[in-house]
Image (cartoon, rainbow, N blue to C red; front, side, top):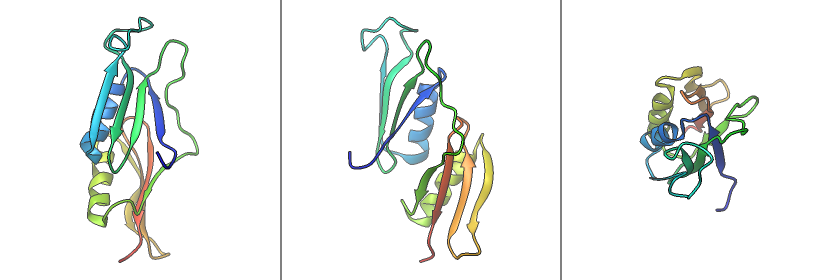
Length: 132
């Protein structure tokens, strides 16, 4: 790994969330349950560890007893220039499905195109690109 990777503690929704992100971004999804890890500190089918590997990489698990699930304030996950504009627009639209558009992905006065969306799992994304 050459850069920080997000690791999210989901409130019992890790399987759904990580599957959603795999559908949005593509890549390889690996999910491991508490039972597979030999743990008994939660439901056997809860996700103990999951990873999405690809253009967008992330990892997460279901929050355990006493753990705080994800709550972001003042933090955005930036995907500025990480793919071609057409792909970035597709990702934005998919993340917006069931979520909330904060600022549409569109040209801005300074020349770049960007936008913000909070997806259905509560992650805040900044997506954009410079003109070609």
